[in-house]
Image (cartoon, rainbow, N blue to C red; front, side):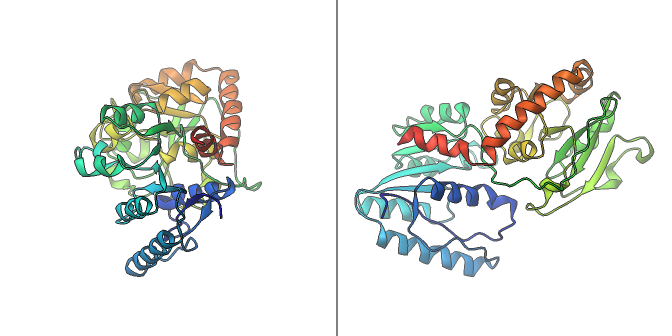
Length: 340
């Protein structure tokens, strides 16, 4: 058995967007020679049964864990992360933690000494980006830390997916996800050569101020395994909060540290990115030439108007390069290799 191992778990659904990143990471680990010592990955919606299966799988994994191994844990791991740490210490094994989410960086939770204490027991950490790594260093972590840079999104292109050529007089900016309050404020923007196509949950047509003079076009909500084939646009918008002028609130501030899975989704839909300039991933977007950053949504009109068709096409070519890495699991693979 390989001395590099991980523990698969139960997810509520095979097609649940919330679990997509973690399920993909398990596949990428396997592709890189890491072996699952728990039960096989399952997709049982019943929370009680699913939790029981995960608990038994973790216990089985700890029993099988060989001394001197390296075990990769994905955090958070429900109630089992601490249990896995205990088992790894018992078996004199090293722990690599792949961080997906941090309560301590979400305003509604505040700093958690318990969370920090738990994560400090990890020997190695894969975190989202430089901004998140800096936060870990501020907490005096002695672990070896590297960045994933972007979350992979394993997917095979559907040749039948609709991809319409860009109309430069009517650029389609896509927003996919939960419809935050800022969405309905978009109609207050000065009109330009753009409109917004919306995909996701929570859309309320009654909140549209003037249905006869709106630049919002709601396209519907689709399962996570199908949405890539339905989204057809020119740019993908990464924005959260209540206002047009800044990403505010809990989700907005978290964007300063977080790698949203939404960005990877947009790349798989062949779209360059428009992102808040204070977001952690704005650096990657600018560096790779896969879009542009803005401080306010009011800047969209001028930024899109000044782009030439040749510049937009170059962004789309850059997207294809980064997309190839995202859909084949290269970002996690590179992070793993840096720690080996």
